[in-house]
Image 1 (cartoon, rainbow, N blue to C red):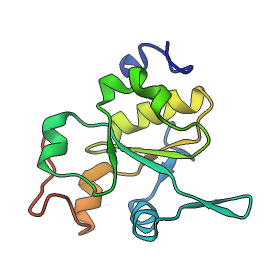
Image 2: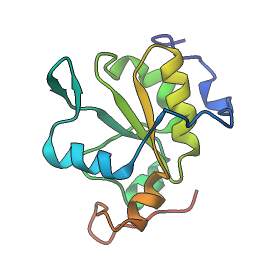
Image 3: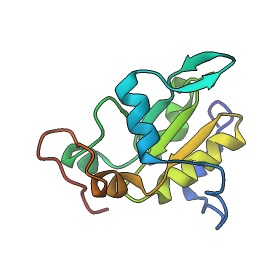
Image 4: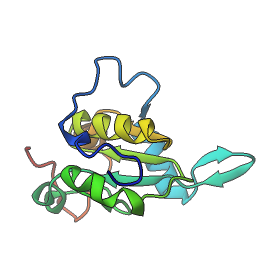
Length: 139
């Protein structure tokens, strides 16, 4: 177990109501990334960490510029590198893996969220992918 994240968090299914209050809209994520700012906490802007939890080939096909990549299966090992003092927003293709990640990290005391609809929704709403010409790969 690393930093309080369950060792087998990747094998846990998110409950049906897990998304309630744990999701962030793609528009909000885009705004945070564009402004370099983030959520208001105690009168100060705190930039959330935005983490892509998809597999490497999915990331290479297309991703949100300015985000970090930690494959879902590697989250437990990488937990110590994720700042507990800052909010974290996870995203994947459609939101399933990021929901599970957010639940596990919230259980360990992080302010963790999932981007609603994942990268598929991000792209559907005509937001840019990196690299140019990027696409949402199948999982």
